[in-house]
Image: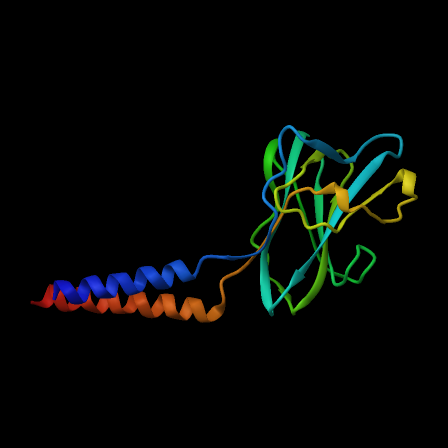
Length: 198
C-alpha cells in the first residue's frame, strides 16, 4: 500500500510540475553596470517608449510579459501592448496597464490570458505620464530587434538592434495539463482513502 501511495504521489508531483508556465522569450536581465535606455514620460513633451519583436512557434496563451526595468520613482503607469507583426506599427492585439514597483527587476503584466497563434509579435513598453524608469542593457541573450519612439522621432518607431534590453514572456499552462494535474491529485486522494479504511 505504501508503494502505491508513493507512486501516486510521484505521478501527482510530475503533473503539477508540468503545470508550470512555459517560457516563450527570456533574454535574461540587463546588466546593472551596462547602459540604461530611458523609459519615461516626463514634462515639457519629453518621453521615450521601447519595444521588442519576437517569434511564437506554436499556438498558446501568453500569461505574462515583463521587461528588465529600473523604476526610479512611483507615480506613473506602464502600458504593455502586444502587436501582431514585426513592428510596433502592426495591428494592436492586446494591451493592459500596470503600475510598476520602484527598484530594479522584472516589471510588467502577469495573469494575462492572451491567445496567440504561431507568428511574429512585437511587445511595446509604453510609458504613461509620470513614469520615470529605464531598461538596463545589455541582456545576455538579446532579441536583436528592438524599437524606440520619442519626441525626436516625431512619435515614429525606429528599429535599433543595439538596445539589447531584457524581455521575458511566458505562456499559461495548457488546459490538458490542468486535467493531468487533477487526475494525479485524484489518484493520491483515492489511495489515501483506501489506506484510511484498512
